[in-house]
Image (tube, rainbow, N blue to C red):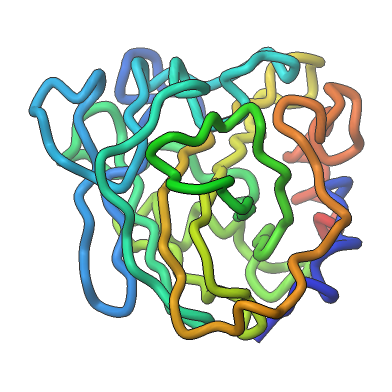
Length: 246
């Protein structure tokens, strides 16, 4: 189990092109300790009450300085009606799909990151642009090995959810969790790395209310630069040279 201290220093310094809406996607659902929360349709057209904040478009965020980097397209100031119950150490499964829910996630090159921020009060009233984020999980290539497949290729791209666990030392409280898929198939050109962030409202119980939340945080937008080595990168060269993505 990774804790805050083992992840705070991680750097993203070290993906097949499909034209049409199917080349992009959204967080379809999350499952927390076996309980599934379906995500809303685009613009919540299905009027689903969800803990996942709705987005307005399944296209990627390309402008790294855009407010959309916080929670996805059009979701910077959007909230969700529900909050999902969790506890320290809870297993969370993220199930992503393309713009058509029955079609798997289309991309297979790039990492995934998970961040969490404390809500000041009820997350249903919390603006994601005010969030102070801590990274709690990351995955690049399987086992962080040079020969390892990209994590997207072995999970989302083949209709398998990506699984991680909340830190065991997570204090009790209300949280906004930001799960992010980064597609690097065109990232050899500046501004063409594709970011797909999505935010989930959580209520964590069972943790110590006296535990300290780390003070070293990042903002979205602001955490990344378009020229960071893990963002402006030729992923195919990394694969050919069998370099580890760190």
